[in-house]
View 1 (tube, helix red, strand yellow):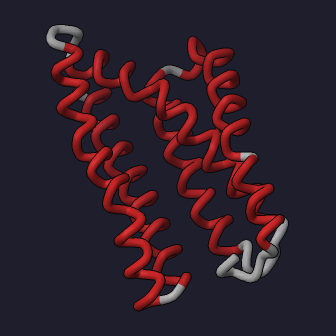
View 2: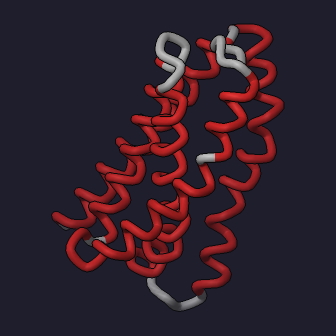
Length: 155
């Protein structure tokens, strides 16, 4: 709504995120053997980067909000499957529950803090500040994953 979309259109786009998560998971499950976890991770995080760009551009072309919903939903849907697979691949299966729980703490705290921090950014910097932060975090996540996965594959 902040970027000039009607509330109904924004709600409809938001409702597309859940089905996009399921669609992303189905596509991943169908191609998992050919793609591999490392490549799927980069594609998923790349989808979140694309979603951030599409959200920012939706103010110019409101239909792009649906591209955002599909890219965000598919990317995060696949990441929810990949997270435990990557933990097991990289850190092993011993103590998996404890390790997985410890790894989940930071994202959980970030998710809890995000609405308040987003509200502060929206109030002080406007929608552009929020979009820029989302894009910067998505690009940073993709770049870190690419670096770590490349080191793992080459070393």
